[in-house]
Each structure stands twice: as C-alpha cells, then as structure tokens.
Length: 328
Image (tube, rainbow, N blue to C red; front, top):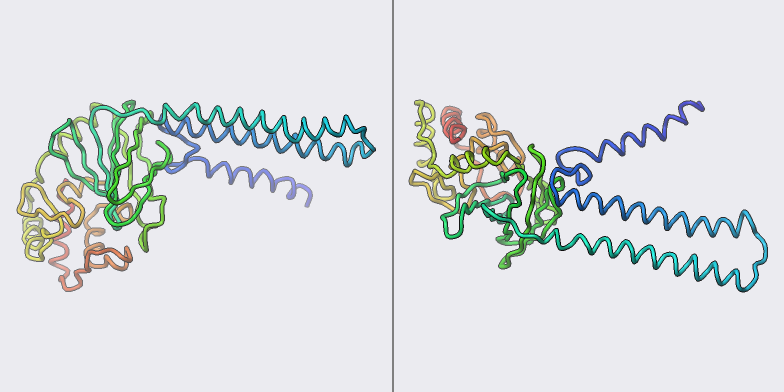
C-alpha cells in the first residue's frame, strides 16, 4: 500500500507534464512569440512560488517554530519587510519583466499579408502577396513560412471571435467592423492547431483550424499553386459531380475560381481537396467525408448555415464528393 501511495504523485506529475506538449500547447512553443510567452509563464510562476513560500514560510516560522513574543521593532520589521517591502519589490520586478517583452510582441510582419475573418462558424483566409495585389482566397487553414515574420490582419463578420494558435503566438480578439492585427514568426516546421478562443455561438467548439508552417521555398511554391484556378475534373465521375455542383446551386454560396461559381457566403472551394480538414477542423478531406458533410451538415455542425442535401441519391452524392475531393 505504501509503494502505491508513493507512486501516485509521480503518475499525476507525468499526466500533468503530458498536457504541456502537442500541437495546441502554449508550453511547447514553435514560434518566437510563443517562446517569449512561455518564458513569461515560467518566470511569473517561479516568482509566485517564491512569494508564496516566503510569506507562508515567515508565517509558519513565527507561529509554529518560534511561537514566542516578539519585540515591537522585530514584529514591525517582519510585517513591513516581509509583508510589504519584499512583495512589492518582487512583484515590481515581475511587472517590469512582463512589460519589457511587449515591444517585441508588437513588431510588424513583412512579405505576404494574411487576412483572416471570423465567420459563423468558419475562417475566411486571404493572402495578399504584395500591396495592391488581388487576394488569394482560402478557408479554414493558414499556411505560414518558417523563420519569417508574417502580418495577420483580423476581422469578424457578425460576432466577436478570438484567433489563437497557442504553439505560435498569443491570442487576439476579432471584432465586427474593426481590424486588429497579430504578427507571428514560426521557428519550427509542422502542423499546429488553432482555435476560436471566444464563445461565439452554438458551433464555437467546432471552429478550429490548422496552421501549417512550411520552409520558405515550399511556402512560395504552395502560394503560387493556390493562386491558380481550380483544376478541371479529369474523370467521368468528377465531371458528373461538377454538373451536380451547379445543378444544386452550390455556386451561389461557394466560389471555385476558373468556373462560374462565385459565391462568397460560404468558404472558397477552389482548392478544398488539398486542405487538411473539412468543416473547420472537423473531418478529413476524403471522398467519404465530403459526402457525410453534404448530407449531414446540421448533425455534424449544429448551427451551420449550409442546408443538408438529403435528397441526393448515393450516385449523385458519390459524384459530387469525387469532384470536391479533386479540387486540389
């Protein structure tokens, strides 16, 4: 029984440490800004522990170890020095350290500008390669170059959202009618999870996205590919799916560049088959998932504005799914 009791704290410690890693952990930073915030967390935590130990240690000393009457001078020294002077000096030092990192967090990005708009409940993403250039529109996924500071302009359509990629940077609120900004400088290639961190309605918990960090040459090649129009379907099934896409009026809400579909109510689907997820981080982008999404949107994501297409036969659904999967 004693050995089991001794193991319990170790097991709990391991479980706690396991929560400090992963693609959505602020304590496993993969960006310059996130590293600064992680360091700030540890410094403030250590400072808080030191202050707690000092104050409670002093209290324990005078009440348990040396429970005797104290002279007025000694009592005042302990109260003023230990209860006022030491906490003020320690907290002032921590405040100075925290404020000193703010200028670096506000540095602007260069190169490609990314604009992200919080919708209900998905993310509209636009890349501006250079000032005055036409935006390259995507959705529900952000790609960034490694070791380069990128400027992200943030906005919202109907309600307040909050943009947060814990492994790369701090969070920033997004307001309708107002633009906020955030610059990120990823330092490690990989895929990291982002999330809306402000309750925005019934599908708030189903509003995530992937942030894909690429080497700079890979990012440039991807951006050039993303700029191109959709690849025309090459198989009979996919061509039939394209016909169904227009027959069902999907182009009224969704855009597919290079076709007559130019809707802006829903996400841009020009390269939807090449993204890592469907429905803002809910499903993979394979044919089966496209079919599930088209037929059961309200079940998969309550509150979504897209109606379920329950009337489609299995053959039509398979063809439409093949077309959407092929948009890469």
